[in-house]
Amino acid sequence: MGQKGDKHTNEAQLSAELIIKKLSEIGGITSKKMFGGHGIFHDEKMFGMIDSKGNPALKVDEELEKKYIKMASTKHGKMPYYAVPNEIFNSDEFIDWAKKSIAIA
Image 1 (cartoon, rainbow, N blue to C red):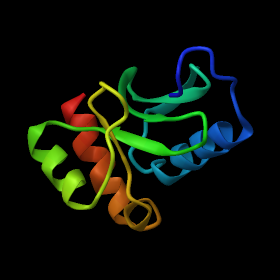
Image 2: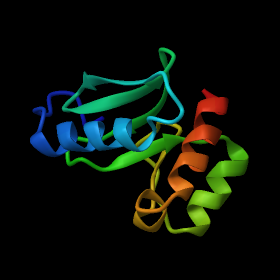
Image 3: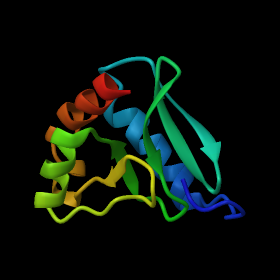
């Protein structure tokens, strides 16, 4: 999600569609426009987000936060979401990372 007042962008829309496609094997994945970006949900529980520039982030707990920081990921404001590193997003590992965030949500 972007900041309050951000305009919804085509990049955010395309990223939401791509994430839903990448996670189709999990089932129950949906998105909702929020603050210029998208919230990503599994069975109506938010576990991920896309900012207004189309960058994906996943929800973390203390354990996952360390893993994200080790990979030089950045936190989204005060929220418990960290940017997904490109090498993870563009690999099959993304599904495993998403499943961990779903369990946290």
